[in-house]
Length: 439
Image (cartoon, rainbow, N blue to C red; front, side, top):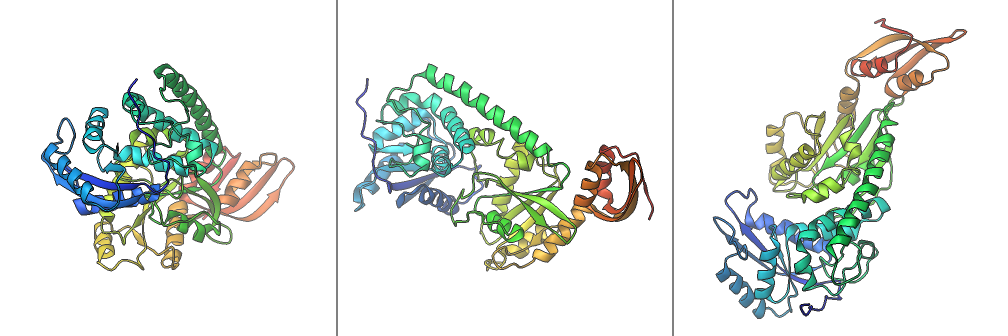
């Protein structure tokens, strides 16, 4: 067995960031490195250097050109602070990581491994820990040979979430042995898929049980202000922090749109550019709220210089989970912070969007009215006859509209109510004895 390198036992690792800019990369190098630095800071490391290179295609052996790689080594040697991690804003193959670690003589991570590590450190619930573990093992499996050469111990995701020491990329999926046997990994993968499938089915039943209510989900790029908006609209006290991926677990609360009208509002995990596919698949159960929501509020940080690219990146993830064709309302948040005219440009590109500030409470009344319109459509007056023993119809009318009168007979109840036209299919699905539009 190869001699292993000691795993770093400090929380604040020192890192140099590397971005290889390819022709098909939509983000400018400076912005790409700025987002990578935010991710690294979220992971708890200190950035001491940044390097980027423009290439027509990746170098097959080490992604970055070999000459540039040796320039990075010279750059590291000139720094006053010792560098123990090189982090690429690209996805690297196991062979490329091995080659780069020989050149740099320190740990090398790619973007996907960094994001997985952040999710591991943020996971708090049993459900999110399982989902992170599955994604990590799927990422780790083809890279086991490389991991054997530089890990003393694979620190569990739960330990990472609890604040245990260990460098970025070492908050692994829970096995505490040096040589992780492939057969054991495959067995654990099967167990995790079964457990997450059970969670997914439970989530689906939970979501289906809310079909009597109109459901709205907040989606969008990480750090767009979804949790702040959730707290403002529902009066809840969801955790808010100016860091990427502050929210991993879906939270649901009642949002009172008016005196007689309320919906269920859910906050979901934020998206990010080039989100690892394993992670999206693993977190499908968490995203069930968005998948089955009646309306999505796509929150965009319009103060960000790359707001348009962040919007597109979030749309790609929505398409991946089957939500792109749903009813989506664009909400441009943080208009109180934008100074470059980005909001005006975005409003021109997306005229149906709503500008708001969740922090200042700007534009919230218009948001509420728009959601009511999306929920109800034109209001009509109905007369509905239903069995007295079936309370589902009355509950539906109360949740989605306004009950005006109730007349109880021996076995039936006749209800006059106001309901939006868009809610009529939901009423029909409950199969009342009779119903008609009276005005």
